[in-house]
Length: 201
Image (cartoon, rainbow, N blue to C red; front, side):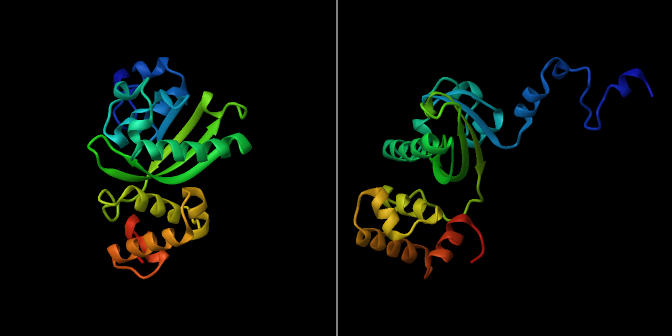
């Protein structure tokens, strides 16, 4: 075996590459298959290639930009941000499953986990992990309010809890739930969640 062969890994990448000069944590972040994000006041400070690729962007496209374009609407940006702020302030962490907007205009479900550096000012600096969930039924044609109710269903909220969060009546939420069940041809919430996430009923 030659000296050059001994410096190669099983994948054929030379151990004498530029990665040798990088800290292991930097290499891990770059290679992580999950989307990693560091945000300041809801702007992108840093993200790994996987995060950018999940949304159809390059890292350079997103660095320094507001996160608002990655949400289905400005209202979603404010509402989800307010919900996250409450949890980050009270316990320093937040997680949910939500719809996010891709560069091509499509919508996709993500599982999101976040932690704040300072509970007194959570959005000053926060770290996030984004995991793309299996694609199921197309949700792009739903109304904003239908998407809100659908997201709350995935979070496990009751109709009453969803109504309180959305600022509407429980009857309105029940009506929207019925519309969603009819649209996707299911008879209960469990089947509805399975249909939109691509999982078997």
